[in-house]
Every structure is written in C-alpha cells, then in structure tokens.
Length: 262
Image 1: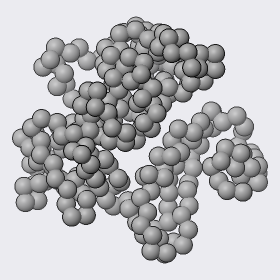
Image 2 (image 1 turned 135 degrees about the horizontal axis):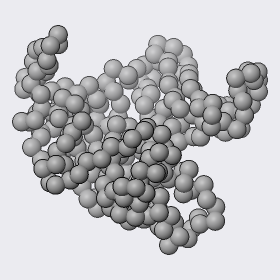
Image 3 (image 1 turned 90 degrees about the vertical axis):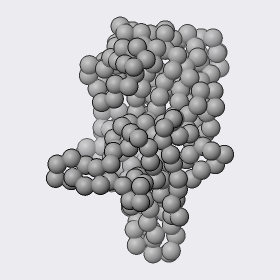
C-alpha cells in the first residue's frame, strides 16, 4: 500500500468492506476529498446510483446534487487505475465537479508511473509520466521505465536485477500520442489466429465490462480460426436464473443483450 499522500498531509482512509453498499455508507461517513479505486467502483457509482434514475437524466443541477449526496459532498478529485474505464464515465464525473483522472502504475515502480494532468484528460489515455520517471517504447511497443524509485531487484527467491540495459520492462504494449500514453495490451496476451490476424484481447474484453450481469469476459483464439469470448456472469445481478436454464435459453438471453450473434 502506498502512503505517499502522508507527505502532503493527506489522511488515508480505507473502506471497511469490499462491498459497494458499504462503500456508499463510508462516503457519507468520511466525506472524502479524494477517492482512488478500480474502474468497477466508478462504473457502479455512475450506473447503479445515477444513470439508472430516469427522472434526473438531462437535468444537470439535479444530477450534480445526487453525485454530491452519494459521494459525501466534498469529493473533488478521483483516480481510476488498474483497468480500463470508458471515457463517458470520466466525462460524466468531470462535468459534475469531480476531476476524475486516469493513471498507470506497477509495484516495481513504487506505485504510479503515469497520470492524467488536471484539466487535460485525453480519452483512453493513462496520462503523462510522473515527475522523476523516464519512459521509452521498445521497437515492439513495450513500455520501458527508469527512475530513482524503480526497483532495481527483487527480494528473496526472485532476487536479481530487474533492469535490462538500465530499463525495467513492464510487459505492457503502449503507444505515445502527443506526449500522452495509451495502453494497448499485455505483451504476452497479444496473439495471432490461424488467419494471421493480430488480436489484442484486452480491447475486446473491455467492451463487455460495463454490461450488467457480466463479471469477467475472456477472449481466446491463439492459433485458432475463430475468436471465442468466454463470459463469467454475476448470477445475483442477472434478471433470469441461468443455473438451470437450457443452452438455448441462455443463448437467447445473451443475444437479446447484443452480446452474441443470432
């Protein structure tokens, strides 16, 4: 856990239980000014509590009041990290008084590597390099990092240098556009199917994370003719019980959501 905020006088508080309803109670109790979490929590705040209320859609003042109410009223900054978050979610919170930023980091870099500059959000970007760290892209697009707070070795069984020619290899493929960095996929996860097409599964998997009832989506197809999407559902959130449903019924259900072809 990173406690860099203590240097700036920040009081870190951790939510008691990893349940969304508990988080909402903590918002009301703590009234935070900064909230750092994974994309799933920001999606839940956006979808479940706000966008699902048809009575306030399009009414900017009412929506902002709801945002303030559920987040405690003092939230000014947010950070979404450790996964993809749709630009619409970023824009929603930014337009309602919460400067939601994007970032990218690794334990080996003591946490943060990049972050969105305030008021300079670029859709799908994870921001620019944080002070004190150097970034470069290898020929294959892999992000390489270097800096005083990048670990030079691992401890214990894995003891040994983490650097190659002075650079730490992140294993993530990036692109750089106008000094902003965009993550493409994990280097080891990109594959070619039997048709010779290069596939970045993360891009496709991210398209499904906002759907109600889907916990995880996983794309497979390395060396195969077709790509197959495996879906792990959230049974408690599905409007139908699929535990005893037939394959035909399940297929019809997901087809109705537009997740699979007829």
